[in-house]
Amino acid sequence: CPNNNEIGDPRVTTEFTYDEAAAICDQVNIQAFGKVFLPALYAPVFVLGLVGNILVIFAIVKGSRQKSITDIFLLNLAISDLLFVISLPFWAFYVMHGWTLGNITCKIISSLYYVGFFGGMFFITVISIDRYLAIVRAAFSLKARTVSHGSLTTFGVWVVAILVSVPQFVFTQEIEEQCTPRYPDDLKEIWPIFCNVAMNVLGFLIPACVISYCYFGIIRTLLSCKNHKKKRAIKLILVVVIVFFLFWTPYNVLIFLETLRHYKLINQCHEFIDYAMHATETLAFSHCCLNPVIYAFAGEKFRKYLCHLFLKCCSFMCLYGPCRQYQASSLTTTPESMLSSNQTQNTSDQDTSVLL
Image (tube, rainbow, N blue to C red; front, side, top):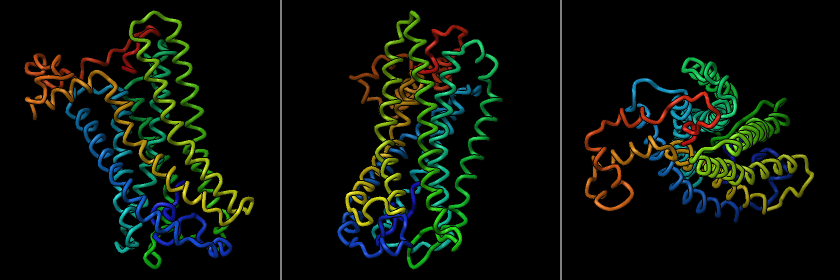
């Protein structure tokens, strides 16, 4: 998984800081690049991710009392992304000034980062499975897609995300103004590799396979049915899949190259990897800004709620524009009724409401 050294150490940009061979590499230019590049890009990721995910949480919590399984998963995805983005200002400060916030804060922020990261990735995977069951296995989904099953699945996802993140809480500590893992001597060689493998396999490969299987199965089902909304649903699916691979594949390739560098299979002092790690890392992290858009706000009920919210706070903004069509209904309709209008469970495999 992404290491604190990559995202926060003002002196070191690679994961294997204890490697004496890597220590001889000149990192001055890379450090200077990171001090300027990372905080400048973490700032918009933090702001957009914070605002977008808070809106999702607020919309679901303020919605109808009877939550659907989709609402449960979207709510927990937003919470995961929120935990993740909360850690970014601390890493930006770390890059610029070193870690001066103490050992306990180091452990807490590192844990929030990892729990949010893995939780977000796991809930994206669970949402794809949920959509697959609702559309491709519609009859089975009547029994499987219940609120109780959704709550149990959510609990299991959080348990797994926390368990995967426990080693970081245990090993991460403040050392000479660095918030970095410090492994026991007998684990120094194997644990960083295990961390990279966990990132590549648990954090990307398995979710990518599940997401691809589920969404392409959904596309096959939609193509075989007659539904006036299926074109929009297919476009949305393609956006979800393309964005996922576009944002996460480069970063995971760099994580794999770091593993090869640790085994000295590639040049230990290859600066391209260090520069590319900064760029691809920020690209991957910005995915949490898009999750509210492609998973929540693509749905009609969330768009209606946002329009109601904007009308209530800034009614003059909706005199012209896309919110005008909701103006009359928003003035006489409560947010609760808006949010409850879109979740219909249909036994037909032609139902696209779970996507739209």
